[in-house]
Length: 288
Image (cartoon, rainbow, N blue to C red):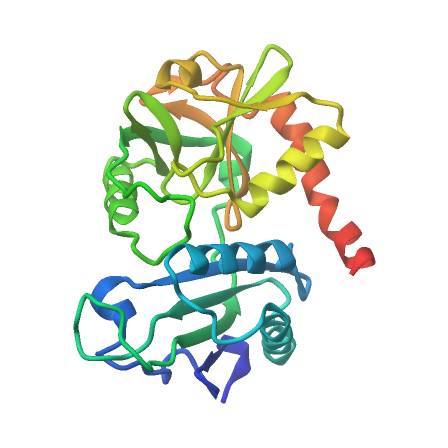
């Protein structure tokens, strides 16, 4: 097995990504009945692993899915796979479904959950986007009402992301009942009047791990941050807008719906915050 291209651990068996197989009766395949996490690896070190696993546990509880392993055991397994691959900058993927059983909407009895853990090279975002800022579009939020649970039911996100891509844009900002929720796979922040605002972490958004790290950093930098309902008009009138996620980290936004945000270039507040974020992982390594 060539670990340089990634390793999969599926229900106790190690394999390459290409060779891993799951039953067609798996409820993740039939119903999207499962939860997942994507964890960034910097220089061989997992970023905020404890927060990711705590969110996995919360998401699983939210869909009444018992995790097949303790968080401590999962942590050991994920760290082992990271070491085995030897990939310095990677992404670790964890997915749990309710398992394989004949198709029936009711929960199956006496069925073991399917547990997948995989580690492979991180998907790179074009570096130029940090220099120019990205361009976004607003679209209706057509997802279910429990977006705070990180489930594998992602079709509305996929459709919105594809619509943005088709328009030649980086991503879509989702709007529900006139209120901004989040992008298809990232959280939103705006800078205004010296402070930072971000949507409320209720059932309408996923409480991002990078989002939490940014809020911590803002406090350390002495910048006020508040959660509140934001409208598309708030975005367009902001001094700066940026999005956060495991993959994009902190991405400045230059245009929304064709309108420039501030100067239409990455701003000073984002630059200062991003510099602080880039210094965060060495501190975590020292702490761990």
